[in-house]
Image (cartoon, rainbow, N blue to C red; front, side, top):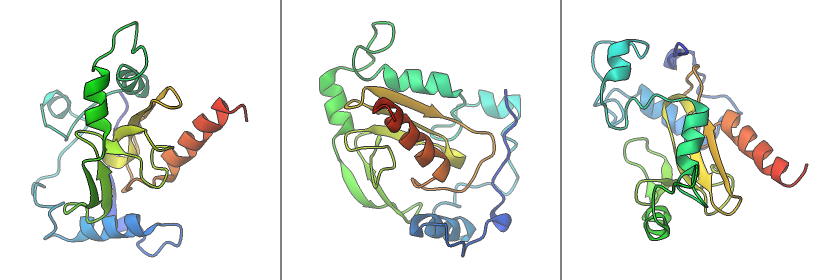
Amino acid sequence: MATMIGIELQDTAIDDQAQTEDRRTLLETARDPDSFLNRPSTTEPVDMNTRAFRAAEIPAGNGVTDARSLARMYASLIGDGVDGIRMLTDETMARASAEATDGRDEVMRIRTRFGLGFSLNRNGSLGQEGAFGHGGAGGSLGFADPKAEIAFGYVMNKMQLVASDDPRTLGLIAAAHASLKGG
């Protein structure tokens, strides 16, 4: 298993012209000791590379997987599923991927768009309208795009402080969609 390399907030420039407003806001929030984002933090550093951390059950906090498995999980939600097994019915998926909220996230202080359990496409963050998924700490991302009939998984070991505008994932998503169009 790859060694995770944490985010170094002090090494992240806040005035970089390449950063979007969301990324600047997220960095400011991460540096604010009174923000909701920092409230669950502990005073002791957490080593993500220990067996104890990876074995712990921390909801929304330590999902550990590889890109292939992440993509297969999302593939199991659309079309014919994986190996003929579909994890959720069409009705459940319609409810889960329908917009439930679109507005400022009070923890990250940026605009987010969610269905019931899934992040929804916003400004191309998942490629196109109708796609649903969820990002993870440091820039990982998994999603399904029923219109394009693809599932996507990206994981990394060098974590970065990013919102839904991570240039690493946006470039990969664009390349995936371009390959479907033959160019």
